[in-house]
Every structure is written in C-alpha cells, then in structure tokens.
Amino acid sequence: MRLIVLTILLLGSAAHATQLTVFAAASLTDALTEVGQKFDARSGHRTTFQFAGSQTLRAQLERGARADVYASANAAQFNPLVRTGLVAPGQTFAKNSLAVIAPRSSRKVNTLRDLAKPGVKLVIADRAVPAGDHTRRMLRATEQSGVYGPGFSARVLKNVVSEEPSVRQVALKVGLGEADAAVVYRSDVTPALRAKVRVIELPTRFDQKVSYPIGVLGASRSAAAAQAFVRYVRSGEGQAILRKWGFQAPR
Image (cartoon, rainbow, N blue to C red; front, side, top):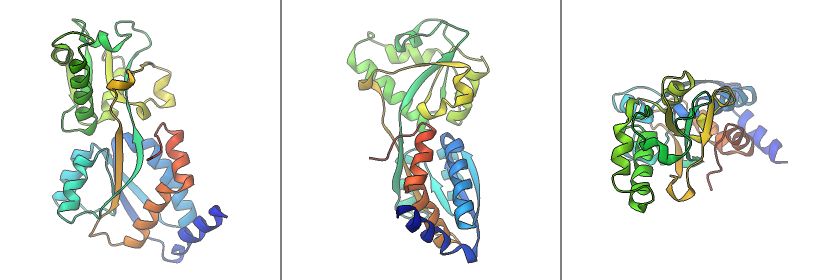
C-alpha cells in the first residue's frame, strides 16, 4: 500500500517532467546518485547533481548559483541559508559517524592513539568542511578525556600533511596510498575503497554524530518536483538506499 501511495505521489507530476538540480555534500555522492536514478525512473523527472564540500556549495548558492535542492553534511552550512531565505527550513534525512581508515598494506596506524605517533602522515578535511569540523571536535573530546595524555589533539594535528576541500578527497588519498591514515565518514568506506583500506573504529564516546539536513531552494523554478525529490529521499525506498551506502536513519 505504501508503495502505491509513493508511486502516486511521484507520478502525479510525471506529465510535467522537469530538470532538477541538486547540490549535495560530497559524502552523499554514491547514495544520492542511486536515489536520483530511482526517483527519475518513478517520476519522469531528470535529476542532475553537483557534489562538493558543503561549504563550497553554500558559497556558490550565496553567490547566486541556481539549484532546486540543497543537501548538506551539517546544519552549520545549511542554517545560514535558511536565515537569509535562500533555502526553506530543512528536514534531517540521514545521520553518519566518523571512522579512521588506513591502507591495508601498512600497519603504522592500528588505533586512534597511533594518530599521534611521530612520522605518521595523516589526511583530514579542511576545518571549513563539515567532516573537518567533526574531526576536530572528536580530537578535542578525546583530549578532554585524558585517555591519551595531554596535548593529544596538538600531536595529531602536527601529523596532518594535507587538509582536503571534501571528505571524498580525504578518502581518496588513503586509497591511493598517499597517507598512513585519514578521518572520514563511515559512509565513505565504499565497497571499492574497502578493498584497499582497514577501518579503525572510534571509541563510541569520542565519535561525533553527524546529521544531514535537506531543503528546497526558495528560488527553485520547479518547487513541486523539488519537494517530491525531498519526499522520496525520506521515503522508505530512499532510506533503504541510504542505509545501503552506510548512512544511518535520521532518528
């Protein structure tokens, strides 16, 4: 019955198929690409995506870039657009968490503590990127616990050899063997990457729960179709695809 209702909701505007542009955080690349394909097949619309760091997409929208939907990797890059009226108030559609990854061919990093070892080459996201902000929050929480001694955060950050503009580029560095470790989202450990890296779990108390908001642009020329896309992302089918790619339910 729910499938029938969903189909009616999506196909109700199929006779007026339109082109949709979705700006979305880089960590959503695989999941939303598949969501878009399924949505288009059901609705008759044509959805294209621009994936990048949430901060980059926000800046583009503030400079007048046209889009219909914005999906961010945190509220910090989403809420300012709501306050200025560029984006309608959003809804959380997915959650995520952090993980440390290291090349399968290297044993330099086996625990979170090892990130502070002298000589380790660490890659993280730039502090303006949601993943970079969450990484630094995680390090502060770890240092405040005292588990790894004073100055742990500073010792880890001293090992950073590159700060990337998106979390996908962070993961790529380790996949290519250009770093000893990186901090990424769990959803970034795709099937293709998993064959190349080891995942080092973070202690639960240090992990950062990441919430993803999504909303329709106020200047969208296809607001009804954009709203239908948001509904599909939050539907049972959309959520199943997100879970497949490592995301967690919004609540």
